[in-house]
Image 1 (cartoon, one colour):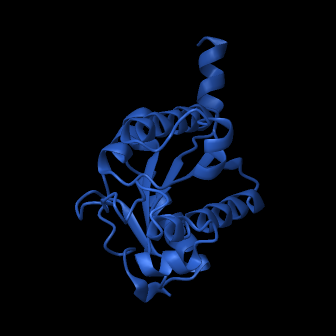
Image 2 (cartoon, rainbow, N blue to C red; image 1 turned 60 degrees about the vertical axis):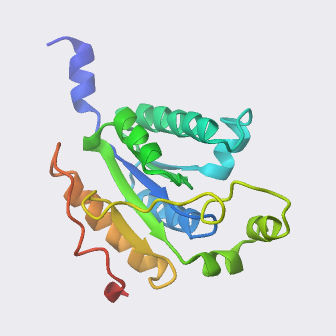
Length: 204
């Protein structure tokens, strides 16, 4: 067997946890809690946070749907490259439309893609919003805010995505649900899992 093939077979398999939800829904908090868990386990893990990506990877992009698609593809391309090196990658984006998540799944590959919707009521997000996004929208200063004038599409019931609700679940409970879901997902190359056992606030 060629040496390059031997090397590729020795690389640990990573995966991508693709977190999405409204601004201030708790995506970043969950992402870094997951990263800390994996680092304590001695695993290679990193976070690709939407706000940070907008600074150094997609500073040239706005928030039109075409630009959101470009941003999603860039994030997915980078995540796919890291996964191929054995990293666990936690991506945190608003990603308001289903076709954006399908775009990411197609780039990364279904076997390595874990779709996680961080659900939170809009009024709770508005109270948490330290960036003042919702306030600026209410004052008519900005447009195109997901959950306001830009419709947000939650996952379909049969999509196999995991839903965690940050207004009802603790960060620790959400981390536990994502970890369990990720392990189950890694047992199958093609099947999208039904996550009814995870999508509940009764796990608090």
